[in-house]
Image (tube, rainbow, N blue to C red):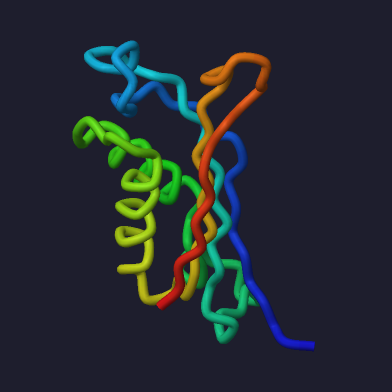
Length: 119
């Protein structure tokens, strides 16, 4: 079996400027983001030090910071921006990101997108 190291965040709740619908222009929209980050399998956590890994708090802060950069027309563009930023970290080899808008479509709980990007 291959080695695998993953860090994840589920359901990070944001209010951000995103969307192409008239009702989304000029006001913040609720968005829920989840991330799974694959680390280089050579990373080992046996020494129990933060320097060996990527902090999930840092991942969450990156997502929050990017959500405040500008108005994104599409969740896809938002996620591409997050992926590019996270993949700058040499310990990260791949990311799986999702962004969902709650109750954006009648009779649905959430609608959204998911991307997977790797170096």
